[in-house]
Every structure is written in C-alpha cells, then in structure tokens.
Image 1: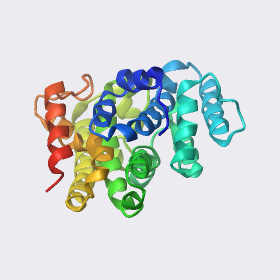
Image 2 (image 1 turned 180 degrees about the vertical axis):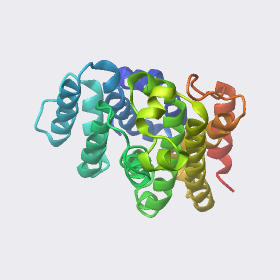
Image 3 (image 1 turned 45 degrees about the vertical axis):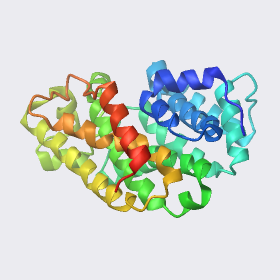
Length: 279
C-alpha cells in the first residue's frame, strides 16, 4: 500500500471537499491512492488561480508531465511523490495523466469553448478520467469494464461544477458554455461574459443543466449494476443531481452566486449511495 502524507490529505481536504468526503467511504488500504489522485487534480485545476499570465501555468503543467514521466525530479513535492507511487503500484496509464494535463491548458486562457463536443471531451479528459483512475485503484477489472459509466458520470459532475463556478469564470472573462449552445440560446461568448445574465444567458444555463441531466440519466441507468467496490470513485458524481436541483430553482442566481448544497445534505447523499448504490 502506498503511503500518504498529511500534506497530500490536506490538499484534498481544503481544495476538493466533495472528493475528500468520498475517500472516507473507501477501504482504508485504498485511501492513499485516492488521495494522491485527487490531490494531483487539485494542483493542476487551481493553477489558473495562482498565475497572472498563461505561460507560467504552462510551465507548471509541463513540470507535472515531466515528473510523471520521470523526466523531472519529484523529490520534495509530497503530492507528486504520492502520485508517482500510486501510478506504479496500480499500473495506471501515463497517457491518461498526459491527456488530463493537456485538457487543463484550456483553463489558462480565455478562449471560449467551441462546441458541445469539445466540452464533453474536456469533461472526459478531466472528471471522467479521474473517476476511471480511481476505479483502477479500487477494482481494476471492474473499472476496465465500466469506462462508459465513468464517461457519463464525469460529464454530469463536471458540467454541474462548471455551472456552479460561473461567477468565478465570468469575473475572469472565461466561458466554458459552448459557442453552439450559446448561439442556440441567442447569444455569444462575448455577450454571455459581458452581460452576466439576461434572458439569453438564462436559456444557455438551462441548456447546460439539461445536458448535465442527460449524462446523469445515462450514468444512473448503468449504475444500477455497478460493482460495489467501485462506488467510492463515483460518490462525488452522485452529488451532481443535488447541485443541478439547486441551480434549477427559480430563486437561483448562477451568474453571481456559487450554488451550494449543505454539508449534511452532501454527506447524506454519499452515505446512501455508498451503502445502497443506485438501485
């Protein structure tokens, strides 16, 4: 079993509370691997928060790529050390991490998301891939047989997360809502960012909620047969339904307020799914 440092656990606890809670439902022997994966995700996802120009962000992402490939020293970075041990112990494909890092390049710039297909690709290389990798640590054979399930779960989770982060993205001038979705709603990326709301913006958000629910429905239909050992990998995605419900309320203002679910509510959802699955 790979060791895990308090620093790696802290990164997840402070940077990704939902995934932190989900790890507590995993067998103790598997937790170090999950913490390592999720801490790595926190580190590459928050690079945009730490930089003022894209180039330093690209350099940081390249460092992670080199460290995973053994081309840069990881000693002294507890998250990188834990991740590399996990990759080796569970024979995880380096290409999955390379693709995840490549997808995160989009975060560093203010270019609009071109299309729904591009958005689903971004979600697949980030959230879906993370679910699949966590599954490899929990039950390799079962994870390899449920790649489609991870794809839909990750898309639902990631789209809900992007909608919850709208106020942050709009303040930066970022637009993750695809251009074709915005066009169908009667607006453009430039107008969506500038107006931060309006009738067209609300239609675009409604379309994104519908897209997330489409993936969520496909995930939940397949999740009825999910092998129990895989459940901890999918617990963060189980919260997508609750987040989408909050975003759909008439009182919701996704353009200026980050939609939230109470800690108790999140814990109850995870507990139910961890013990009873998606039956």
